[in-house]
Length: 376
Image 1 (cartoon, rainbow, N blue to C red):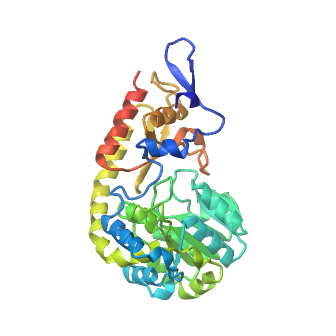
Image 2 (image 1 turned 120 degrees about the vertical axis):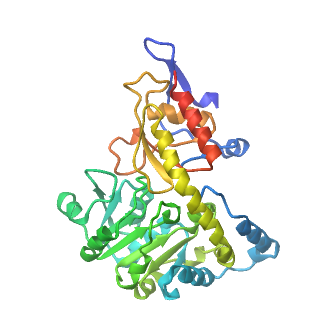
Image 3 (image 1 turned 90 degrees about the vertical axis):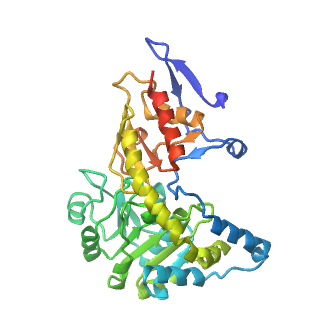
């Protein structure tokens, strides 16, 4: 580890400052396995993977399910998700990662100038471009909340389709129905990524609106909800006529056995979801409060399972002066808090980072470590 980072003395003092390599430091896979890393960059369910799912997956493997081709139509998961969200099964389609779903949706609905609420993951831009459309950043000049349609259309660029999030990553802000309906009335089609909605503070899904808005497509991400990011599973919700159109552009062969396993145990996960909501209602406000007490850290309002932060210690007498240094020092302590250097829509990308809520004892470890790092 020591060979990967160089240090030099700061003028006028004995403190040391990390000098980063030209590219972000990455760790070999063998080292990742040897060290018990805590990853704060992945906002999945902090309660961890449900034991009932792991047991069912183990049973399926032992019973030889890996040797049997899965139901690529995802019928079992479509049926259970349709019932859970009170829509017909014809309104549900199973996919893999949200970004792959976005790419397929964009391809199916035709070339467009897609306005995207920023800040947003870089995968959004890649999915839209690879889907044959243009990426138009829609930045709110006043906050990180989604920009109102009329302001975006007048002040930014003309666009005829939109990709929004509920809540957005890394902004952690929920979308309002009034704002969404303005986009629906003025765009050919609108995609809403609800990957982290189940992990938000009181967020409500817009899936019911698909019944009367054929130009609305919703993406949900069970992999984040149930802490199984190693098995990408997403669900697309839309009007049945829209789903028929999307089916001709999606590759169902990507759907694996895990979707069937999740469908089988889903009814047993209601208590797990209740405990998740109860935990996050306490943890997210507490985490925001504790982060705001650390010198140099500015937090932004969070309504999702992650808190957008900005660090600037250049005008303070702290142990580190930049987000670069803070990120490296945390990594050396086994805490992975990467910067948001590849996120579109941030004025000073190198100053921002995002903290995904974990278990309370783990979050306390992060906070205590940050306090020690910034203290001289």
